[in-house]
Figure 1 (cartoon, rainbow, N blue to C red):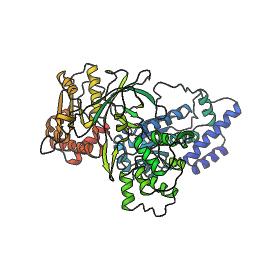
Figure 2 (figure 1 turned 135 degrees about the vertical axis):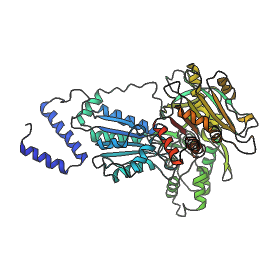
Figure 3 (figure 1 turned 90 degrees about the vertical axis):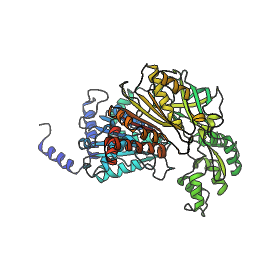
Figure 4 (figure 1 turned 30 degrees about the vertical axis):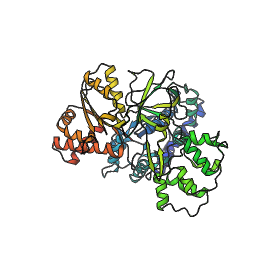
Length: 583
């Protein structure tokens, strides 16, 4: 026997009273002592972990790819540090598997009104249900991603964290709720988990052998590629009530590769007129030097290129009130609530003027983030280009005209100008691997963009038929985006069917969801033949209406109740046959 009876009793007593985290620490501690005594690394390879160290399971709930990216970085760092680790999209993970886990790390995004991403809904509902398993054998940690401008900030992560605790699990590290600028928090969380789980010597040896080669795909928010604007075309005519732009951006020498369904993130600039008005109202100097993360800028440059000046939220307004010592700030008043909902920084400093230094103002503001668009082209058709379809946003609120940040910046550009960008893979919005699988695509307005990419890809590969596009806009004559291209694709049979809904061309408004219900019998026939469903558009209106239309189609044609039809759709989601790119 390797250990004597007294040692065995001591170990048993220690095991009975130790938490999972303590046992993990002890395994690494004794492993390190053994290494010191024999003077060698007992693992068979550089990245070996102590044999007693349990597997870490990383689960992620993602929609635009941010949570997936954080989860993958955690997986890679743990693996390189010698920790056995697995990673799963929650769509591919069954809740009963939690019975076999010891260490679970969760990365979860929140979208809409505190909602979990589509691909995580089945896991989320099962975890919250009465039949969820006991988890008192699990240690866990949660990293939440969200946007603090929403009331239910990081709600999905909060829900997972609370439910794991309710089911008996023990926190390895406290939950992290991270705002839109999540990268720094993610790196810290990943580092803390790695240092908790991995033995120090294993970390050192793995870091010595790590490969930090930068690839051409490493363009990011902090390191964007400057793509040249090759062409910009207004897709709507003078009679339209809107302007929709088609942009073609060069990717020469970037090394960027993307797939149909992926996302391009563009880093815009703020309206210079709005910047000037803010500086004038605050009485500050545009040339005053300020610092953002140890980098110096003039105030004008910081407001124009680095900071979000067009949206307010409760947290920002509270901090502004504290910084300016305005005790009469009533956050529940109609005035302040209206500012938070519809106003911008200029509205706030005009309504509640106060003396504030340039640096103090900059410190209050959130960073100006990239704007993300579904890619409207296929690299099989346009090798060194990426195409974007953008609606120019202009409206009025609180007695002032407003402009969408990115759309109006793009509309102001000319051919030859540079557009900072990077690509975000969108693995939850991909064409089926079997080219003969039927595809139903539903998009309204600029939501048709990814389907242009899908069909260009199939055209370049010589694939015909099995495609059905539902497209909606206001007027046939002025708003039929990419009309000639769709007609050409129909003629070549790359696009088998196209159903159109122009809402304002008749007395009764008709939308894409109405066309789906009208074609219910054929749509359900396609579903029974294995069709994939794709929806791209507004989350709160169009996407919900289309989802309800699918429920109607399935209930009527499949002779099911509404709940059974909903379950049918959830099953399609679990099979990746129902995919949404919504915003």
